[in-house]
Length: 236
Image (tube, rainbow, N blue to C red; front, side, top):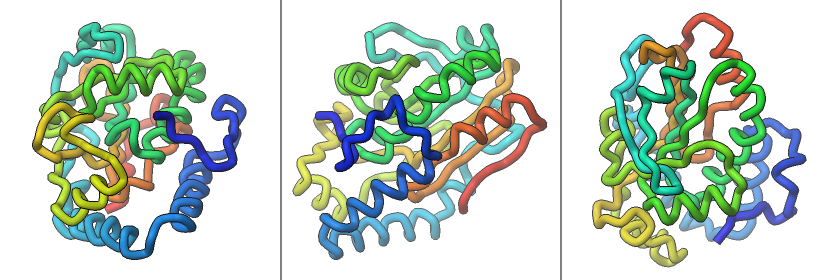
């Protein structure tokens, strides 16, 4: 099922910043989701921040772990092959069930011509199955590889993985978000949202990670990093 804004905007014509898009979605969700449910999510985010998950994730200057993962068409995509062509933009997201992830992927799609012009490629990584990645790429018209990180093996190397707490699992089940089905395993593990720009030698030149799933890296910041000196962007 494709997640849409209640205003049914055409994602191809949306000129707002990603922050503005996600703020609108957060406002709409707050109008319809019970306060006690929102409180559960807030507690999980606060605990992840207390643990410092984002602070301990891959940072600027580190070498990106090499990976090979199946894309939404079932084809193997390797980081080495992408880096041979130029710099690489890597986005970690939770899944097609998350409206903030959908907004982020659509924003990256809109930025793709500029990223291509800068000589870079985009790859999006989530723990969802290849079938779920295919549905997402097809429904949102994504023009970059959406790859499946089974068991969060790559996300774990980036330091992004956490286990969904029991009370949040119950919230997801009530909303028919069944991560064991979506991700193809019983771990109930997800990555925190993150984005990286990587040089051709595998060195990270831009890094963003945030435990709050409503906070995402702006495509314009990633574009700027393709043309500037390395920098660190992270909300800790």
